Amino acid sequence: MSSWAIGAFAGSAFSGMTMTTLGRKILHLGLALMAAGLVALYAVFEAAGTGVGGWHLAAPLLLFGAGMGMIFVPLFDIIVAGIADHEVGSGSAALESVQQLGASLGIAILGTVFFGAIGTPVAGHFAAAAALDAAKQVTALTVGLTAAAFLVAFLLPRHARAH
Image 1 (cartoon, rainbow, N blue to C red):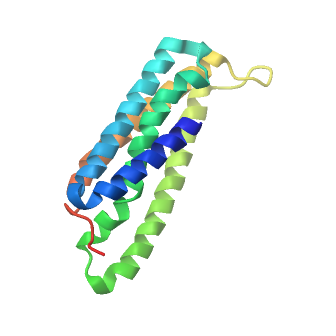
Image 2: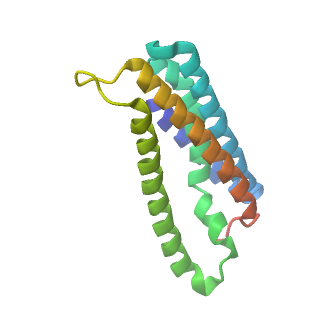
């Protein structure tokens, strides 16, 4: 949805301008916005039910995208801030590999939860109520994972690596 992309664009612009002054606080701000967007998404699922449409999702996805965008720009610079200069190349490569692995595992796990919760299709179609319940389960799980990331971010260096 385009609202997510607009939010991600705005969030990344904001974090690019403020990362040197806010340091890892920008990660916490981004993760808090992501969690707020997910809670709003869950509320939309509850309120709209099986009649949920694209316009219902626009605001929660805008908020989620803004939070995620805030994390894109500073994350690697903050993570590698504690690495010695001669180790930055290797550390960055390892970080990129771990990030790709984490993204792949995240999609696989959340997809498994979703399709495990949705059940078996009847006459080639999934029931709308089952799909909604599965989406709510995945959203709630993602809120929990975002909260865990918020806590883990406290272990990162306070400031981004100077360029």
